[in-house]
Image (cartoon, rainbow, N blue to C red; front, top):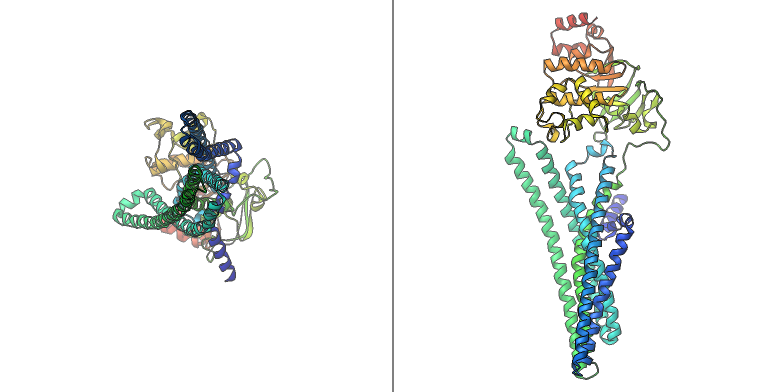
Length: 604
Protein backbone atom coordinates (compact mmCIF):
# COMPACT_ATOMS: atom_id res chain seq x y z
CA UNK A 1 0.00 0.00 0.00
CA UNK A 2 2.86 2.38 0.82
CA UNK A 3 4.43 1.68 -2.56
CA UNK A 4 1.15 2.44 -4.34
CA UNK A 5 0.85 5.69 -2.39
CA UNK A 6 4.39 6.69 -3.29
CA UNK A 7 3.77 5.89 -6.97
CA UNK A 8 0.61 7.99 -6.96
CA UNK A 9 2.47 10.87 -5.30
CA UNK A 10 5.24 10.62 -7.88
CA UNK A 11 2.75 10.74 -10.75
CA UNK A 12 1.03 13.73 -9.19
CA UNK A 13 4.36 15.50 -8.69
CA UNK A 14 5.19 15.00 -12.37
CA UNK A 15 1.84 16.37 -13.39
CA UNK A 16 2.57 19.57 -11.51
CA UNK A 17 5.70 20.42 -13.47
CA UNK A 18 6.91 20.99 -16.99
CA UNK A 19 9.61 18.38 -16.51
CA UNK A 20 8.36 16.09 -19.32
CA UNK A 21 9.30 18.85 -21.78
CA UNK A 22 12.93 18.45 -20.68
CA UNK A 23 12.87 15.00 -22.29
CA UNK A 24 12.75 16.75 -25.64
CA UNK A 25 16.19 18.30 -25.08
CA UNK A 26 18.06 15.53 -26.97
CA UNK A 27 15.94 16.31 -30.02
CA UNK A 28 16.62 20.03 -29.71
CA UNK A 29 20.36 19.50 -29.34
CA UNK A 30 20.44 17.60 -32.63
CA UNK A 31 19.85 20.91 -34.38
CA UNK A 32 22.21 23.30 -32.62
CA UNK A 33 22.31 25.59 -35.64
CA UNK A 34 18.55 26.16 -35.62
CA UNK A 35 18.52 26.42 -31.85
CA UNK A 36 21.40 28.90 -31.80
CA UNK A 37 19.80 31.01 -34.53
CA UNK A 38 16.50 31.09 -32.67
CA UNK A 39 18.17 32.17 -29.40
CA UNK A 40 20.32 34.80 -31.16
CA UNK A 41 17.38 36.51 -32.85
CA UNK A 42 15.25 36.15 -29.71
CA UNK A 43 17.87 38.07 -27.75
CA UNK A 44 18.25 40.64 -30.52
CA UNK A 45 14.50 41.26 -30.63
CA UNK A 46 14.29 41.58 -26.84
CA UNK A 47 17.30 43.93 -26.67
CA UNK A 48 15.90 46.09 -29.47
CA UNK A 49 12.54 46.34 -27.69
CA UNK A 50 14.26 47.37 -24.46
CA UNK A 51 15.98 50.34 -26.14
CA UNK A 52 12.68 52.02 -26.98
CA UNK A 53 11.90 53.45 -23.47
CA UNK A 54 15.35 55.09 -23.28
CA UNK A 55 14.72 56.83 -26.60
CA UNK A 56 11.33 58.00 -25.35
CA UNK A 57 12.85 59.43 -22.14
CA UNK A 58 15.50 61.42 -24.02
CA UNK A 59 12.89 62.86 -26.38
CA UNK A 60 10.66 63.94 -23.49
CA UNK A 61 13.45 65.37 -21.36
CA UNK A 62 15.66 66.90 -24.07
CA UNK A 63 13.60 67.22 -27.19
CA UNK A 64 10.15 68.43 -26.15
CA UNK A 65 11.27 70.52 -23.19
CA UNK A 66 14.05 72.21 -25.18
CA UNK A 67 12.03 72.64 -28.37
CA UNK A 68 14.89 71.14 -30.42
CA UNK A 69 13.17 70.08 -33.66
CA UNK A 70 16.32 68.57 -35.20
CA UNK A 71 16.89 66.47 -32.06
CA UNK A 72 13.36 65.09 -32.34
CA UNK A 73 13.76 64.33 -36.05
CA UNK A 74 16.97 62.42 -35.38
CA UNK A 75 15.34 60.37 -32.66
CA UNK A 76 12.32 59.52 -34.80
CA UNK A 77 14.68 58.43 -37.58
CA UNK A 78 16.48 56.28 -35.03
CA UNK A 79 13.17 54.76 -33.96
CA UNK A 80 12.46 53.78 -37.58
CA UNK A 81 15.85 52.06 -37.67
CA UNK A 82 15.09 50.25 -34.41
CA UNK A 83 11.75 49.15 -35.85
CA UNK A 84 13.53 47.74 -38.93
CA UNK A 85 15.96 45.76 -36.74
CA UNK A 86 13.06 44.53 -34.58
CA UNK A 87 11.10 43.44 -37.65
CA UNK A 88 14.07 41.53 -39.10
CA UNK A 89 14.89 39.90 -35.76
CA UNK A 90 11.26 38.88 -35.25
CA UNK A 91 11.00 37.42 -38.76
CA UNK A 92 14.21 35.42 -38.36
CA UNK A 93 13.14 34.29 -34.88
CA UNK A 94 9.86 33.02 -36.34
CA UNK A 95 11.64 31.16 -39.12
CA UNK A 96 14.14 29.45 -36.83
CA UNK A 97 11.71 28.45 -34.08
CA UNK A 98 8.97 27.17 -36.40
CA UNK A 99 11.48 25.20 -38.45
CA UNK A 100 12.94 23.78 -35.26
CA UNK A 101 9.47 22.80 -34.02
CA UNK A 102 8.61 21.04 -37.29
CA UNK A 103 11.93 19.21 -37.31
CA UNK A 104 11.69 18.09 -33.68
CA UNK A 105 8.12 16.83 -33.95
CA UNK A 106 9.00 14.90 -37.13
CA UNK A 107 11.84 13.20 -35.25
CA UNK A 108 9.64 12.47 -32.24
CA UNK A 109 6.94 10.92 -34.41
CA UNK A 110 9.51 8.85 -36.28
CA UNK A 111 11.19 7.60 -33.10
CA UNK A 112 7.93 6.83 -31.31
CA UNK A 113 6.57 4.90 -34.30
CA UNK A 114 9.85 3.03 -34.74
CA UNK A 115 9.84 2.13 -31.04
CA UNK A 116 6.20 1.05 -31.08
CA UNK A 117 6.95 -1.39 -33.91
CA UNK A 118 9.52 -3.10 -31.67
CA UNK A 119 7.12 -3.62 -28.76
CA UNK A 120 5.94 -7.14 -28.10
CA UNK A 121 2.40 -8.32 -28.87
CA UNK A 122 1.77 -8.42 -25.11
CA UNK A 123 1.80 -4.60 -25.14
CA UNK A 124 -0.81 -4.44 -27.90
CA UNK A 125 -2.94 -7.04 -26.14
CA UNK A 126 -3.60 -4.39 -23.48
CA UNK A 127 -3.51 -1.23 -25.66
CA UNK A 128 -5.77 0.29 -28.28
CA UNK A 129 -4.18 1.05 -31.63
CA UNK A 130 -6.38 4.14 -32.06
CA UNK A 131 -5.10 5.56 -28.77
CA UNK A 132 -1.51 5.08 -29.93
CA UNK A 133 -2.29 6.81 -33.23
CA UNK A 134 -3.85 9.68 -31.27
CA UNK A 135 -0.58 10.16 -29.41
CA UNK A 136 1.36 10.17 -32.67
CA UNK A 137 -1.00 12.72 -34.21
CA UNK A 138 -2.65 15.05 -31.67
CA UNK A 139 0.00 14.90 -28.95
CA UNK A 140 2.85 15.37 -31.41
CA UNK A 141 1.07 18.41 -32.86
CA UNK A 142 0.79 19.85 -29.36
CA UNK A 143 4.54 19.39 -28.91
CA UNK A 144 5.21 21.05 -32.26
CA UNK A 145 3.33 24.11 -31.07
CA UNK A 146 5.28 24.13 -27.80
CA UNK A 147 8.73 23.66 -29.30
CA UNK A 148 7.95 26.21 -32.00
CA UNK A 149 5.78 29.22 -31.27
CA UNK A 150 4.96 28.66 -27.59
CA UNK A 151 8.52 28.05 -26.38
CA UNK A 152 9.68 30.99 -28.47
CA UNK A 153 7.10 33.28 -26.88
CA UNK A 154 7.94 31.96 -23.44
CA UNK A 155 11.65 32.63 -23.90
CA UNK A 156 11.04 36.00 -25.54
CA UNK A 157 8.78 37.16 -22.74
CA UNK A 158 11.15 35.81 -20.10
CA UNK A 159 14.05 37.76 -21.60
CA UNK A 160 11.88 40.83 -22.06
CA UNK A 161 10.47 40.59 -18.54
CA UNK A 162 13.85 40.14 -16.87
CA UNK A 163 15.40 42.86 -18.99
CA UNK A 164 12.55 45.24 -18.24
CA UNK A 165 12.81 44.58 -14.49
CA UNK A 166 16.58 45.19 -14.63
CA UNK A 167 16.09 48.47 -16.48
CA UNK A 168 13.36 49.48 -14.02
CA UNK A 169 15.90 49.09 -11.22
CA UNK A 170 18.41 51.21 -13.15
CA UNK A 171 15.79 53.85 -13.91
CA UNK A 172 14.28 54.15 -10.42
CA UNK A 173 15.39 51.84 -7.61
CA UNK A 174 12.72 53.13 -5.22
CA UNK A 175 9.81 52.51 -7.58
CA UNK A 176 11.32 49.18 -8.58
CA UNK A 177 11.28 48.06 -4.94
CA UNK A 178 7.48 48.45 -4.94
CA UNK A 179 7.14 46.37 -8.13
CA UNK A 180 9.56 43.66 -7.00
CA UNK A 181 7.75 43.34 -3.67
CA UNK A 182 4.52 42.66 -5.59
CA UNK A 183 6.03 39.93 -7.78
CA UNK A 184 5.57 37.04 -5.28
CA UNK A 185 1.94 38.05 -4.82
CA UNK A 186 1.50 37.68 -8.58
CA UNK A 187 3.74 34.72 -9.39
CA UNK A 188 2.82 32.27 -6.62
CA UNK A 189 -0.88 32.10 -7.56
CA UNK A 190 0.17 31.71 -11.22
CA UNK A 191 2.26 28.66 -10.34
CA UNK A 192 -0.59 27.16 -8.30
CA UNK A 193 -3.16 27.65 -11.06
CA UNK A 194 -0.65 26.44 -13.65
CA UNK A 195 -0.43 23.08 -11.90
CA UNK A 196 -4.19 22.77 -12.04
CA UNK A 197 -4.17 23.63 -15.75
CA UNK A 198 -1.62 20.92 -16.53
CA UNK A 199 -3.55 18.27 -14.63
CA UNK A 200 -6.75 19.14 -16.46
CA UNK A 201 -4.93 19.31 -19.80
CA UNK A 202 -3.57 15.79 -19.37
CA UNK A 203 -7.05 14.51 -18.52
CA UNK A 204 -8.48 16.25 -21.61
CA UNK A 205 -5.82 14.67 -23.84
CA UNK A 206 -6.43 11.20 -22.39
CA UNK A 207 -10.18 11.55 -22.90
CA UNK A 208 -9.74 12.71 -26.51
CA UNK A 209 -7.41 9.76 -27.18
CA UNK A 210 -10.05 7.34 -25.91
CA UNK A 211 -12.64 8.87 -28.24
CA UNK A 212 -10.20 8.67 -31.16
CA UNK A 213 -9.42 5.03 -30.40
CA UNK A 214 -13.12 4.14 -30.38
CA UNK A 215 -13.69 5.99 -33.67
CA UNK A 216 -10.74 4.20 -35.28
CA UNK A 217 -12.01 0.80 -34.18
CA UNK A 218 -15.57 1.51 -35.38
CA UNK A 219 -14.49 2.80 -38.79
CA UNK A 220 -12.22 -0.22 -39.24
CA UNK A 221 -15.19 -2.51 -38.65
CA UNK A 222 -17.69 -0.46 -40.68
CA UNK A 223 -19.04 -3.48 -42.59
CA UNK A 224 -19.75 -5.42 -39.42
CA UNK A 225 -21.25 -2.31 -37.86
CA UNK A 226 -23.66 -1.83 -40.79
CA UNK A 227 -24.42 -5.52 -41.13
CA UNK A 228 -25.77 -5.56 -37.58
CA UNK A 229 -27.50 -2.15 -38.09
CA UNK A 230 -25.70 -0.69 -35.08
CA UNK A 231 -24.98 2.73 -36.57
CA UNK A 232 -27.18 4.45 -33.99
CA UNK A 233 -25.62 2.66 -31.02
CA UNK A 234 -22.06 3.34 -32.17
CA UNK A 235 -22.87 6.98 -32.95
CA UNK A 236 -24.37 7.49 -29.50
CA UNK A 237 -21.38 5.91 -27.81
CA UNK A 238 -18.94 8.01 -29.82
CA UNK A 239 -21.02 11.11 -29.14
CA UNK A 240 -20.76 10.34 -25.43
CA UNK A 241 -16.98 9.96 -25.74
CA UNK A 242 -16.74 13.24 -27.67
CA UNK A 243 -18.89 15.03 -25.09
CA UNK A 244 -16.68 13.68 -22.31
CA UNK A 245 -13.61 14.97 -24.20
CA UNK A 246 -15.35 18.33 -24.63
CA UNK A 247 -16.15 18.60 -20.93
CA UNK A 248 -12.56 17.75 -20.04
CA UNK A 249 -11.30 20.34 -22.52
CA UNK A 250 -13.75 22.92 -21.20
CA UNK A 251 -12.57 22.33 -17.64
CA UNK A 252 -9.00 22.86 -18.82
CA UNK A 253 -10.03 26.01 -20.70
CA UNK A 254 -11.86 27.39 -17.64
CA UNK A 255 -8.74 26.94 -15.56
CA UNK A 256 -6.61 28.66 -18.20
CA UNK A 257 -9.12 31.51 -18.60
CA UNK A 258 -9.17 32.15 -14.84
CA UNK A 259 -5.37 31.98 -14.77
CA UNK A 260 -5.15 34.58 -17.55
CA UNK A 261 -7.71 36.92 -15.97
CA UNK A 262 -6.01 36.77 -12.58
CA UNK A 263 -2.58 37.43 -14.10
CA UNK A 264 -3.68 40.38 -16.20
CA UNK A 265 -5.62 42.07 -13.39
CA UNK A 266 -2.93 41.70 -10.72
CA UNK A 267 -0.11 42.72 -13.04
CA UNK A 268 -1.75 45.82 -14.43
CA UNK A 269 -3.16 46.82 -11.03
CA UNK A 270 0.43 46.87 -9.79
CA UNK A 271 1.43 49.01 -12.80
CA UNK A 272 -1.31 51.53 -11.98
CA UNK A 273 -0.14 51.68 -8.37
CA UNK A 274 3.44 52.31 -9.44
CA UNK A 275 2.31 54.97 -11.91
CA UNK A 276 0.43 56.76 -9.12
CA UNK A 277 3.54 56.82 -6.92
CA UNK A 278 5.64 58.04 -9.84
CA UNK A 279 3.15 60.80 -10.69
CA UNK A 280 3.41 62.04 -7.11
CA UNK A 281 7.20 62.31 -7.50
CA UNK A 282 6.96 64.18 -10.78
CA UNK A 283 4.58 66.66 -9.14
CA UNK A 284 7.04 67.01 -6.26
CA UNK A 285 9.77 67.63 -8.86
CA UNK A 286 11.90 64.73 -7.56
CA UNK A 287 11.67 62.81 -10.86
CA UNK A 288 11.58 63.99 -14.48
CA UNK A 289 8.63 63.25 -16.73
CA UNK A 290 10.94 61.42 -19.15
CA UNK A 291 12.23 59.16 -16.40
CA UNK A 292 8.68 58.35 -15.31
CA UNK A 293 7.77 57.65 -18.94
CA UNK A 294 10.78 55.36 -19.29
CA UNK A 295 9.96 53.55 -16.06
CA UNK A 296 6.31 53.26 -17.07
CA UNK A 297 7.19 51.70 -20.43
CA UNK A 298 9.52 49.23 -18.76
CA UNK A 299 6.85 48.34 -16.23
CA UNK A 300 4.34 47.84 -19.07
CA UNK A 301 6.87 45.61 -20.85
CA UNK A 302 7.40 43.61 -17.65
CA UNK A 303 3.67 43.39 -16.99
CA UNK A 304 2.94 42.39 -20.57
CA UNK A 305 5.66 39.76 -20.45
CA UNK A 306 4.29 38.28 -17.22
CA UNK A 307 0.76 38.38 -18.61
CA UNK A 308 1.86 36.62 -21.79
CA UNK A 309 3.77 34.07 -19.72
CA UNK A 310 0.58 33.24 -17.83
CA UNK A 311 -1.07 32.27 -21.12
CA UNK A 312 2.03 30.57 -22.45
CA UNK A 313 2.32 28.59 -19.22
CA UNK A 314 -1.06 27.01 -19.89
CA UNK A 315 0.00 26.03 -23.40
CA UNK A 316 3.29 24.66 -22.11
CA UNK A 317 1.34 22.69 -19.51
CA UNK A 318 -0.69 21.10 -22.30
CA UNK A 319 2.48 20.35 -24.23
CA UNK A 320 4.03 18.83 -21.11
CA UNK A 321 1.06 16.49 -20.86
CA UNK A 322 1.48 15.54 -24.52
CA UNK A 323 5.23 15.02 -24.07
CA UNK A 324 4.56 12.84 -21.05
CA UNK A 325 2.17 10.62 -23.03
CA UNK A 326 4.65 10.24 -25.90
CA UNK A 327 7.63 9.60 -23.65
CA UNK A 328 5.54 6.96 -21.86
CA UNK A 329 5.46 5.11 -25.18
CA UNK A 330 9.20 5.59 -25.64
CA UNK A 331 9.73 4.29 -22.10
CA UNK A 332 7.84 1.06 -22.82
CA UNK A 333 10.26 -1.84 -22.88
CA UNK A 334 9.59 -4.73 -25.27
CA UNK A 335 8.98 -7.94 -23.40
CA UNK A 336 10.74 -9.83 -26.21
CA UNK A 337 14.17 -8.60 -27.20
CA UNK A 338 17.45 -9.92 -28.47
CA UNK A 339 19.84 -11.05 -25.71
CA UNK A 340 23.06 -9.10 -25.22
CA UNK A 341 25.03 -11.84 -26.97
CA UNK A 342 22.53 -13.76 -29.13
CA UNK A 343 23.42 -17.24 -30.32
CA UNK A 344 23.71 -17.34 -34.12
CA UNK A 345 21.47 -19.74 -35.99
CA UNK A 346 23.41 -22.41 -37.89
CA UNK A 347 23.88 -22.19 -41.64
CA UNK A 348 22.55 -23.49 -43.86
CA UNK A 349 19.10 -23.34 -42.30
CA UNK A 350 17.16 -26.58 -42.10
CA UNK A 351 13.96 -25.50 -40.36
CA UNK A 352 14.14 -28.14 -37.60
CA UNK A 353 11.67 -27.32 -34.81
CA UNK A 354 11.30 -28.73 -31.30
CA UNK A 355 9.29 -27.91 -28.18
CA UNK A 356 10.52 -29.35 -24.90
CA UNK A 357 7.98 -29.41 -22.05
CA UNK A 358 6.68 -25.93 -22.93
CA UNK A 359 4.07 -24.31 -20.70
CA UNK A 360 2.62 -20.90 -21.49
CA UNK A 361 -0.18 -18.52 -20.48
CA UNK A 362 -0.93 -15.26 -22.26
CA UNK A 363 -0.03 -12.15 -20.21
CA UNK A 364 -3.60 -10.91 -20.58
CA UNK A 365 -4.90 -14.21 -19.14
CA UNK A 366 -2.22 -15.39 -16.71
CA UNK A 367 -4.63 -17.65 -14.84
CA UNK A 368 -5.44 -19.73 -17.92
CA UNK A 369 -2.73 -21.90 -19.49
CA UNK A 370 -2.66 -22.10 -23.28
CA UNK A 371 0.04 -24.80 -23.35
CA UNK A 372 0.77 -27.40 -20.69
CA UNK A 373 4.05 -29.31 -20.91
CA UNK A 374 3.93 -29.43 -24.72
CA UNK A 375 6.70 -31.51 -26.33
CA UNK A 376 7.20 -32.45 -29.99
CA UNK A 377 9.89 -32.38 -32.67
CA UNK A 378 9.68 -31.69 -36.40
CA UNK A 379 12.53 -32.91 -38.60
CA UNK A 380 13.98 -30.83 -41.46
CA UNK A 381 11.79 -31.04 -44.54
CA UNK A 382 8.95 -32.74 -42.66
CA UNK A 383 5.32 -31.62 -42.96
CA UNK A 384 3.41 -31.85 -39.70
CA UNK A 385 -0.26 -30.98 -39.27
CA UNK A 386 -1.52 -29.66 -35.95
CA UNK A 387 -5.19 -30.26 -35.26
CA UNK A 388 -7.41 -30.04 -32.24
CA UNK A 389 -10.54 -28.39 -30.89
CA UNK A 390 -10.82 -24.63 -30.63
CA UNK A 391 -8.66 -23.29 -27.80
CA UNK A 392 -6.37 -26.34 -27.79
CA UNK A 393 -3.26 -24.16 -28.32
CA UNK A 394 -2.61 -24.57 -32.04
CA UNK A 395 -2.13 -20.88 -32.87
CA UNK A 396 -0.13 -20.43 -29.66
CA UNK A 397 2.49 -22.81 -31.05
CA UNK A 398 2.95 -20.45 -34.01
CA UNK A 399 3.06 -17.41 -31.72
CA UNK A 400 5.89 -18.95 -29.69
CA UNK A 401 7.79 -20.05 -32.79
CA UNK A 402 7.66 -16.47 -34.07
CA UNK A 403 8.71 -15.44 -30.57
CA UNK A 404 5.87 -13.05 -30.00
CA UNK A 405 6.02 -14.40 -26.46
CA UNK A 406 8.37 -16.49 -24.33
CA UNK A 407 7.12 -19.58 -22.48
CA UNK A 408 6.94 -19.58 -18.70
CA UNK A 409 8.52 -23.04 -18.64
CA UNK A 410 10.34 -25.27 -21.10
CA UNK A 411 11.92 -24.11 -24.32
CA UNK A 412 11.38 -24.02 -28.07
CA UNK A 413 14.23 -24.43 -30.55
CA UNK A 414 14.81 -23.64 -34.20
CA UNK A 415 17.66 -25.46 -35.90
CA UNK A 416 18.77 -26.58 -32.45
CA UNK A 417 19.07 -23.06 -30.98
CA UNK A 418 16.95 -22.00 -28.01
CA UNK A 419 14.57 -19.32 -29.31
CA UNK A 420 14.99 -17.23 -26.16
CA UNK A 421 18.76 -17.04 -26.76
CA UNK A 422 18.55 -16.08 -30.44
CA UNK A 423 17.88 -12.73 -32.06
CA UNK A 424 14.10 -12.58 -32.75
CA UNK A 425 14.72 -10.80 -36.06
CA UNK A 426 17.04 -13.59 -37.24
CA UNK A 427 14.55 -16.22 -36.09
CA UNK A 428 11.64 -14.60 -37.91
CA UNK A 429 13.81 -14.16 -40.99
CA UNK A 430 13.77 -17.96 -41.37
CA UNK A 431 9.98 -18.22 -41.16
CA UNK A 432 7.21 -17.55 -43.68
CA UNK A 433 3.61 -17.58 -42.51
CA UNK A 434 0.24 -17.65 -44.20
CA UNK A 435 -2.22 -16.67 -41.45
CA UNK A 436 -5.93 -17.38 -41.35
CA UNK A 437 -6.68 -13.69 -40.81
CA UNK A 438 -4.78 -12.23 -43.75
CA UNK A 439 -3.41 -8.69 -43.45
CA UNK A 440 -3.61 -6.68 -46.66
CA UNK A 441 -2.31 -3.11 -46.67
CA UNK A 442 -3.86 -0.10 -48.40
CA UNK A 443 -1.38 -0.27 -51.25
CA UNK A 444 -0.92 -1.92 -54.62
CA UNK A 445 -1.11 -5.65 -55.21
CA UNK A 446 2.61 -5.72 -56.05
CA UNK A 447 3.52 -3.89 -52.82
CA UNK A 448 1.43 -6.33 -50.78
CA UNK A 449 3.15 -9.35 -52.28
CA UNK A 450 6.54 -7.62 -52.07
CA UNK A 451 5.98 -7.19 -48.32
CA UNK A 452 7.29 -10.76 -48.02
CA UNK A 453 10.72 -9.66 -49.24
CA UNK A 454 11.26 -5.89 -49.36
CA UNK A 455 13.16 -4.81 -52.45
CA UNK A 456 12.20 -7.88 -54.48
CA UNK A 457 12.25 -7.43 -58.25
CA UNK A 458 8.97 -7.18 -60.14
CA UNK A 459 9.70 -10.46 -61.97
CA UNK A 460 10.07 -12.27 -58.62
CA UNK A 461 6.78 -10.79 -57.38
CA UNK A 462 4.93 -11.92 -60.49
CA UNK A 463 6.52 -15.37 -60.32
CA UNK A 464 5.34 -15.73 -56.71
CA UNK A 465 1.82 -14.69 -57.74
CA UNK A 466 1.88 -17.19 -60.58
CA UNK A 467 2.93 -19.98 -58.21
CA UNK A 468 0.13 -18.99 -55.82
CA UNK A 469 -2.44 -19.17 -58.63
CA UNK A 470 -3.03 -15.42 -58.19
CA UNK A 471 -1.63 -14.10 -61.48
CA UNK A 472 -4.91 -14.65 -63.33
CA UNK A 473 -7.17 -12.52 -61.16
CA UNK A 474 -4.44 -9.89 -60.64
CA UNK A 475 -4.00 -9.45 -64.40
CA UNK A 476 -7.77 -8.91 -64.70
CA UNK A 477 -7.71 -5.99 -62.24
CA UNK A 478 -7.94 -2.46 -63.72
CA UNK A 479 -4.23 -1.72 -63.28
CA UNK A 480 -2.95 -5.23 -62.82
CA UNK A 481 -0.24 -5.45 -60.20
CA UNK A 482 -0.40 -1.67 -59.71
CA UNK A 483 -4.06 -1.75 -58.63
CA UNK A 484 -4.78 -0.15 -55.25
CA UNK A 485 -6.66 -2.69 -53.12
CA UNK A 486 -8.03 -0.33 -50.43
CA UNK A 487 -7.72 -0.49 -46.66
CA UNK A 488 -7.38 -4.09 -45.48
CA UNK A 489 -7.87 -5.17 -49.10
CA UNK A 490 -11.60 -4.44 -49.08
CA UNK A 491 -11.79 -4.49 -52.88
CA UNK A 492 -10.65 -8.13 -52.97
CA UNK A 493 -12.53 -11.29 -52.15
CA UNK A 494 -11.50 -13.48 -49.25
CA UNK A 495 -9.95 -16.03 -51.59
CA UNK A 496 -8.02 -13.36 -53.47
CA UNK A 497 -6.60 -11.97 -50.23
CA UNK A 498 -5.60 -15.48 -49.21
CA UNK A 499 -3.76 -16.09 -52.47
CA UNK A 500 -1.89 -12.78 -52.15
CA UNK A 501 -0.80 -13.91 -48.67
CA UNK A 502 0.38 -17.23 -50.12
CA UNK A 503 2.30 -15.37 -52.85
CA UNK A 504 3.89 -13.25 -50.12
CA UNK A 505 5.04 -16.41 -48.32
CA UNK A 506 6.34 -17.92 -51.56
CA UNK A 507 8.35 -14.77 -52.24
CA UNK A 508 9.88 -14.90 -48.75
CA UNK A 509 11.40 -18.30 -49.59
CA UNK A 510 12.00 -19.23 -45.93
CA UNK A 511 13.12 -22.70 -44.69
CA UNK A 512 10.24 -22.94 -42.19
CA UNK A 513 6.69 -22.50 -43.42
CA UNK A 514 3.73 -21.92 -41.11
CA UNK A 515 0.27 -22.41 -42.62
CA UNK A 516 -2.64 -21.36 -40.42
CA UNK A 517 -5.78 -22.54 -42.24
CA UNK A 518 -4.15 -21.24 -45.43
CA UNK A 519 -6.98 -22.48 -47.66
CA UNK A 520 -9.88 -21.71 -45.34
CA UNK A 521 -11.17 -18.73 -47.36
CA UNK A 522 -11.04 -20.45 -50.77
CA UNK A 523 -13.80 -22.05 -52.76
CA UNK A 524 -13.38 -25.63 -53.93
CA UNK A 525 -11.87 -24.71 -57.30
CA UNK A 526 -9.44 -22.18 -55.87
CA UNK A 527 -8.51 -24.53 -53.06
CA UNK A 528 -7.47 -27.20 -55.54
CA UNK A 529 -5.28 -24.74 -57.44
CA UNK A 530 -3.72 -23.27 -54.32
CA UNK A 531 -3.19 -26.71 -52.81
CA UNK A 532 -1.00 -27.54 -55.78
CA UNK A 533 0.94 -24.31 -55.27
CA UNK A 534 1.37 -25.08 -51.58
CA UNK A 535 2.61 -28.59 -52.32
CA UNK A 536 5.27 -27.14 -54.57
CA UNK A 537 6.12 -24.52 -51.96
CA UNK A 538 6.39 -27.14 -49.22
CA UNK A 539 8.96 -29.22 -51.11
CA UNK A 540 12.28 -29.21 -49.28
CA UNK A 541 10.91 -27.08 -46.43
CA UNK A 542 9.83 -27.81 -42.90
CA UNK A 543 6.11 -27.09 -42.76
CA UNK A 544 3.73 -26.80 -39.83
CA UNK A 545 0.07 -26.76 -40.82
CA UNK A 546 -2.90 -25.80 -38.68
CA UNK A 547 -5.86 -27.25 -40.53
CA UNK A 548 -9.21 -28.88 -40.19
CA UNK A 549 -9.76 -29.83 -43.81
CA UNK A 550 -8.75 -33.41 -44.59
CA UNK A 551 -7.27 -32.42 -47.96
CA UNK A 552 -4.52 -30.60 -46.09
CA UNK A 553 -4.16 -33.07 -43.24
CA UNK A 554 -3.76 -36.07 -45.54
CA UNK A 555 -0.67 -34.54 -47.16
CA UNK A 556 1.13 -34.30 -43.81
CA UNK A 557 3.87 -36.76 -42.82
CA UNK A 558 2.50 -36.72 -39.28
CA UNK A 559 -0.48 -35.30 -37.42
CA UNK A 560 -0.23 -33.87 -33.90
CA UNK A 561 -3.51 -33.72 -32.02
CA UNK A 562 -3.61 -31.03 -29.34
CA UNK A 563 -6.12 -30.80 -26.56
CA UNK A 564 -5.89 -28.51 -23.54
CA UNK A 565 -2.40 -27.37 -24.56
CA UNK A 566 -0.81 -30.84 -24.81
CA UNK A 567 -0.22 -33.48 -27.48
CA UNK A 568 -2.80 -36.20 -26.81
CA UNK A 569 -2.41 -38.14 -30.06
CA UNK A 570 0.16 -38.48 -32.84
CA UNK A 571 0.22 -40.43 -36.05
CA UNK A 572 -1.12 -40.63 -39.59
CA UNK A 573 -4.70 -39.99 -40.57
CA UNK A 574 -5.55 -43.68 -40.82
CA UNK A 575 -3.91 -44.65 -37.52
CA UNK A 576 -5.61 -41.82 -35.67
CA UNK A 577 -9.02 -42.64 -37.08
CA UNK A 578 -8.52 -46.23 -36.04
CA UNK A 579 -7.75 -45.15 -32.48
CA UNK A 580 -11.21 -43.63 -32.14
CA UNK A 581 -9.90 -40.78 -30.00
CA UNK A 582 -9.97 -37.00 -30.26
CA UNK A 583 -8.90 -36.90 -33.91
CA UNK A 584 -11.50 -39.45 -34.95
CA UNK A 585 -14.19 -37.42 -33.15
CA UNK A 586 -13.11 -34.20 -34.86
CA UNK A 587 -13.02 -35.90 -38.25
CA UNK A 588 -16.46 -37.38 -37.71
CA UNK A 589 -17.89 -33.94 -37.05
CA UNK A 590 -16.87 -32.95 -40.60
CA UNK A 591 -17.51 -36.18 -42.45
CA UNK A 592 -19.43 -39.38 -41.92
CA UNK A 593 -17.35 -42.19 -40.44
CA UNK A 594 -17.39 -44.37 -43.57
CA UNK A 595 -16.08 -41.57 -45.77
CA UNK A 596 -13.37 -40.75 -43.23
CA UNK A 597 -12.13 -44.33 -43.24
CA UNK A 598 -12.30 -44.48 -47.04
CA UNK A 599 -10.26 -41.33 -47.40
CA UNK A 600 -7.72 -42.71 -44.98
CA UNK A 601 -7.36 -45.96 -46.96
CA UNK A 602 -7.00 -43.98 -50.21
CA UNK A 603 -4.27 -41.87 -48.64
CA UNK A 604 -2.37 -45.00 -47.68
